[in-house]
Image (cartoon, rainbow, N blue to C red):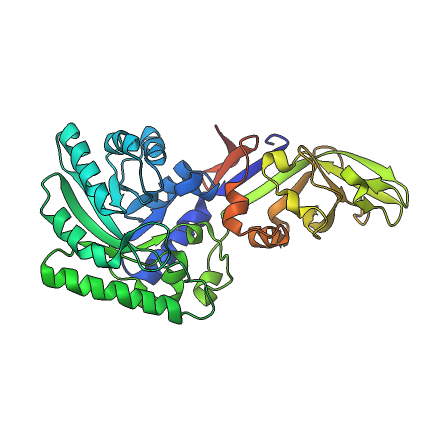
Length: 382
C-alpha cells in the first residue's frame, strides 16, 4: 500500500498507446513529455515511449531536458518552447535540439554555439495562426535560408502547430495546413528544406492524415486521453495510463439536515454515512469539483463527493454501500475499480477543466507509483 493518496502510472498503457500512434502515423513519432509528462511523470513516460519505438522526445524547457539527461536518458530531445538567453547553457549541456521562434533566436544560438565550440541543432517553428510562438510565414523562408548557411547551427527540421485540430469543423485547420505546405514547397525549391517536417500533434495525428508529413508529435494521446472526444475509432484503442487513488481516513454518521463542510454547502438529505478521503486541493484535486456531481469509486460502486473539496480532505457519501468502508480502504478518483471506471476526462469536465490541466495540477504531496508487468508491487517514485 502507498501513502494516503497516490498517482499510478501504467507503463504498459503508455507503450500500447505509442504503438497505436506509430502504426497509425506510418512515420517517426516524437513523444512529447513536457510538464512532467502532463503530470504523469516525465522520466517514466519517456523511457516507456522510447522502448515502444518513439524516435525522440519533446519538452518545453531546457530544465526539462536536463531532468531527462540526469535520469540517464540518452535519446534525442527537442526543446519545443521558446527560450531565454540564460537558458541556452542548459540546452547545450543537455545536447538538445533548440527550436527557433523568431529570427533573433538564430543569433542567440550562434553565440551559444561559439561558446560550446560546436554547431548546435535547431529547428524552425512557423506560426500559421495561433499567435503564440513561431516565425511569421513571411519571415520563415529567409530564416531557413540564414540557418542553412550558418556554420554555428545544424538545421534539422521545420514545424508548425495546428491550434484548432480538435474543432468539429476542420476547414480552418486545413487552410492553415495548406499555408504551411506552400512554405514547404518554397523551401524545397530554394534548397533549404530540412529533413524533418512536422505539423501533427495528438489530435491532427488521428484526424488529419494529410498533416502527418514525415514526422508527428504526440503527448496527451500517448497517455490515453481524448480531450475533445474527437479521435474516433483509432482513439478508442488508447488506454488511460493514469489512476488517482486515496485511502479512507475515517467514517462518521450525520443526521438529516446536517450541513457538511466549509460554508455548509451540502446538507444531508437523510441519515448519512460519510467517508473522509485523505486527498484535497492541496494535492491537486480541483476545488471546482465542489458541488458539481463528482463521484469516486469505492468497492466498485460510485459514491458522490459532497460538500467542499478541502485542502487535505474530501468527503464522500457512502450510505448506499453494502458495508461501511474501513480506514485504509481505497477510493478511486480516476481509474478502474473492478468493472467500474471513472475517467480523467469525466473528472476534468466536472471541474470545468481540460484533462491536461487536471493531470498537470496533481501535486507533489502525492506519492507516485509505477506499474509494470515485471513489477506487480508498487515502485515508489521520488
